[in-house]
Image (cartoon, rainbow, N blue to C red):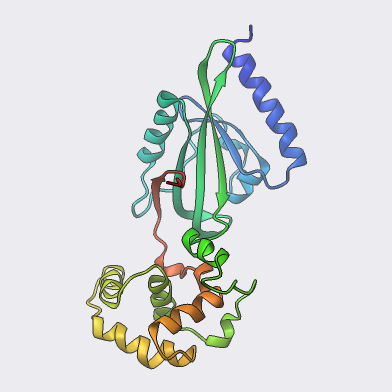
Length: 243
């Protein structure tokens, strides 16, 4: 019968071997006290750290809506519920602020059924708008080209923001409200309406908003997120469920 320490050593030894053959494994193993026990080379590169993090807490810098306490609470939930937790994060990741997922699993010693560590996997989000991809599969929208020629459209910062929010299903009024919060100043519905009519519809040669929506989808704009819409945040998420 292996002790918790012996089993944990076996686990990290196996992970170290795996790290040598899978070059893109972004993983950190934490103890039940949330301190790092083992980190892969990719993890250290992506989060700009080294093995000095071992036996210490591994959290991004607190900023905006991200707080260290969220990670601690999340990890205690993993231990107590003995099930995985997934979070959507926007933070510094691989050299730039961008969205990524973190999935945390309990590591259980099978000889005594005790949770002895937390296995944390980090990954970039490969696509956005799952519902858009499903509709593409049914040929509601044409499949987007693999690479969008962004230079062709010479989009302004505001146009990028509006495109993202428009493809997320927001109306002009809702887009105005979101941008008002982001910029801490009033953005009116008429301003957004004017941008659609005088700028976006002309740039994309679309006569209606529905036509604009279809052209944006065909060009793959649902894959893009304006950088200035990112804030540092951690949000719990669940798996998609069919019903």
